[in-house]
Amino acid sequence: MNYLWPILIIISLFFAIISGNITNLNNSIFNSVSDVVNLSLTLVGNMCLWCGLMAIIKQTKIMSFLMKILRPLLNWLYPDARSNKDAMEAISINTVSNFLGIGNAATPAGLKAMDELQKENPKKDELSNSMIMLIVLNTTSIQLIPTTAIAVRAALGSPMPSNIIVPIWISTLAGTLTGIILTKLLLKEE
Image 1: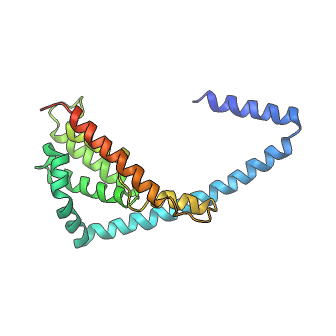
Image 2: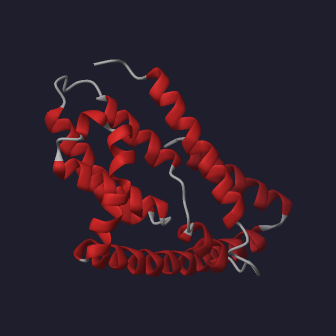
Image 3: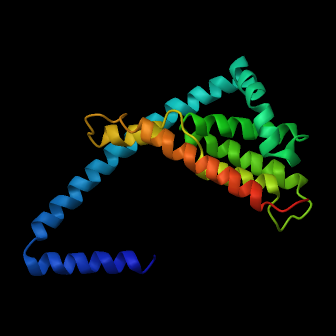
């Protein structure tokens, strides 16, 4: 990648000069920079809002209520992590954050869960079954409210940024169920 991007930039510049489109290239560069700044500000604002909301939820009874609801499912998904309270709490926060479509808030909890799971992992150079399941569920996560996708679409001027909710529900549900089934079938017995 360190070589690919500079080569593509040089080739683009070369063809812009040859075809007489250097003005268009300059205009597109400056317009793109403006679009990137606007998109970045939108995403940062979105991330601050949802990370702040998750911080508030963590301090209230809402999180303990959600953890109670998720406990049977998480015990089934992560059987070797049942006894690790800190890992299960981090996994719960991670799961709720992903479910709400705020992957930025899910990342710290996911990293903490991995750290807690690694502490109890007897084979430090291999992933435990719970670590594998956590990676699969973070990759596929069902999203009730795909906030980041909606924010990107809104920032880029979509007239109906939330009309992707149902397709995202279908695709994330299918991906998550497939991931769980295959992971459960392929996990090594301990």
